[in-house]
Amino acid sequence: MRQELFGILSDGGEADLFTLSSSVGITVRITNYGGRIVSLEAPDRSGRPEEIGIGFDNLAGYTGQRHYCGALVGRVANRIRNGRFTLLGKEYFLPLNEKGRVHLHGGIHGLSFRRWDATEEGGKLRLDILSRDGEEGYPGNLRATVWYALSERDLTIEYRAETDNSTIVNLTNHAFFNLNSFRRDILAHELRIDAESYLRVDGDLVPTGEVFPVAGTPLDFNTAKPIGQDIDKLPTGYDLAYVFPEGKKRTKWLAEVFDPDSGRVLSLATDQPSVQLYSGEYLDGTLSGGLHGAKYLRRYAFCLEAQKHPDAINHANLPSIVLNPGQIYRQNTVYRLEVR
Image (tube, rainbow, N blue to C red):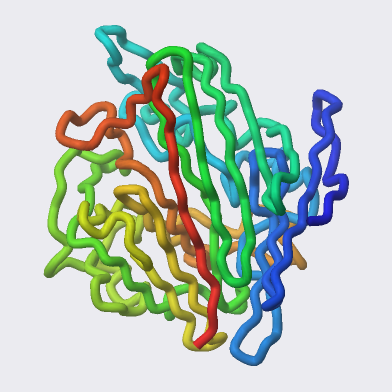
């Protein structure tokens, strides 16, 4: 693991950049500002390594723009309707940082925009943070730890969190991928997701609590198909949570993306009950400072964000995201990179 200075934050603190490499030519670079994956390089079928993740050349690319590229997201990933929830009889109000109606990805000063403490632990990058009681409206002092590990072809992200008061937690990573290294959009990428249902969303992309089958809809990826095959049948492209069957939740591999041009294959394994598929609808080329001069245009990247069900705190039929004192929040997600 190599460590170097990435930049100086507005409070004078240093943000560092950590590089992990594997023997098969995969390299990942991570900064402790927001726990972000800054760069992910992987070889194509001819053995040529290229950048396949959205990232920025310097710290200013992250501090000067409000986005979540490559970031650790929390306390609660995804959307919470009206920024409100009730826990143990008390109502809590969170910042509305999306359309003035929705609480998104932990709020204005969520974990994506914080400096995490970084150490090396057994060849892994360990990141620690304390989110204090009341930050962004959330109750309880939450201590979270995330480990990044690169082993041959597997990038593993392991999460752990504890609280001193009942709160809600749903962490994820918001990495964007383009397996053809941004030479074109991701519509020809072939995607498979082993999910028989999804969470229906409203016009603000907040789940209604209804779980519907994917069969017979443009959302069905149980048999691999190009991402672009049915995307224009949807008003907002793909930006919703797929629900994994309980029996499959801990099996490999729950999702797979294949790029016919480069031969790269990205597979996902997770112990989480859902994955958010995002097809990059809101990328519009305005994010400046992309790696190697890359421009991030509409549908030029996708996300597979393993997580608990979004807005679950407001729907009794969805599995709970409440964390109580004495309990430990855990998550383990693996991205595997291969060629075909």
